[in-house]
Image (tube, rainbow, N blue to C red; front, side, top):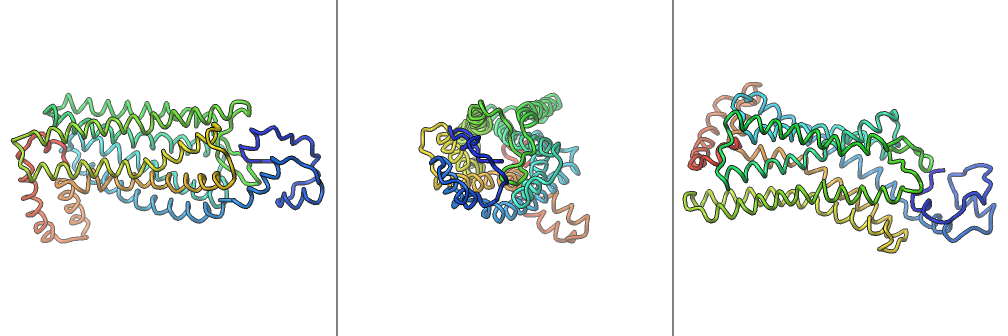
Amino acid sequence: MGFPDWMEEMDFNFDDFQFEYYDSNLSSYFNNNYSNFSDDFITYLDCENYNTEPFKKVFLPLFYSTIFIVGLLGNAMTIIVFLKNRQSMAMTDTIILHLSAADILLVITLPFWAVEAVRGWIFEPFACKLFGAMFSINFNCGIYLLGGISIQRYLSIVHAVQMYNKPRSLVVHISCLAVWIFCHFLAIPDLIYLRKMKTNGTWKCQYDFDANSAKKWIIGLRFVNHFISFLIPLTIMLYCYFMIIKTLRQSHNIQRKKEVRAMKVIVMVVAAFLICWIPYNVVIFIDTLQRMGVIDRNCAIESSLDIAIDITSSLGYFHCCLNPFLYAFAGVKFRRNLLQIFCDIGCITQKTVKKYAKSIHRESMSQCQSADTTNSGL
């Protein structure tokens, strides 16, 4: 019949009722046919007043469509620029290329989830497993590749490791491949348990756990995701950038202006990650506490959490739209190559390219005083 998960956890016995038919208006049906039923079921009927589906049908398609367009265009442009200049790609460029690929594959899945919010999962059952796993893989890849960029900058600035020779370049490719394999491993639960199921008369792509262990599975996966998909990469980024800032402040060979500039970029990168992902993880943690019984459950709180999860998760997905601007569009070398592509396709004139190239050249020369940072290619 597709009752909510929280009703399955109660002691309410559905077998006490002999259903002749299922009316979409459950409240009217049972008021007309049964005068005595449990308080738990009355609670379910009351919760119909807190239905969040109308909100999801409007908000999710609009926001997912925006992320899809912006993320697809931004990351596609990043890939085109780097592939066109692949012979001069540095190590950070390689990681950004993988990052952009992961972000594109992630945003490609969003239109399917937008359709599900409006009409339910109208696609084939195998598509549920495929796009669910695909979303999980590229979501985790994006976060861990951000951590990889942090490690590369940490090594090049704090330990002055030169990252442009071929042996070390091979290490980057192997590291990126290892990240992809690891994220495929994390998607195994999606491939196994995601199914096309009918819930409240609508087909949904959702997890199908055994009724006796569903709560344990959900809570377990929540804590695993908190730890693996947020706390580990966050710790990596904070440590790396803290050491980078500390090194820059103690250095006497880097100009003060350049030091302040580098610190601003670092703060911007960390702030974007925190702003996009902390709200979602806080809301999910509160929802997990409620499922564990630490927080009392009621319709108002559950509906508010449901809406909050949709909003904060969308904010997290928006982070993949910011990556091209944070890691590529802010780079001198990238802007020069991008302008040249626009010139090649006739969007701007060569005169415009030369005009901006002069200012870019001056900016680039000011950055060349430290070999540690110029090897990033940004």
